[in-house]
Image: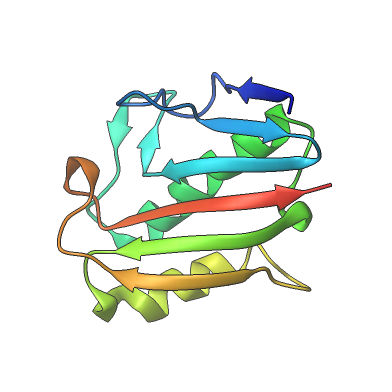
Length: 126
């Protein structure tokens, strides 16, 4: 199997021993993204709508770096600190998938890296 490590300078650098994404054949596996704005270094956690948009933008930067876009995503995993934020996260998330949304699960967890409120990973296929 041939695998290629994908890195976008526009998305936050990994904060551990993992890659932003790995491409294996025509499948792209993107690691969980959090709301770090790479251009400013800011962590956006004050407002869940802005936080979710930044997470989705970071996913988009990595997708684009590999020559993919949101239409190629077949599966997302959403991890949230409080399912009380689900409706807002879902509203923002939905704006990135206007037709044929991917499969997904949403799971409430007790804690996320850097104490963020939402983290999303995905798998895309060309």
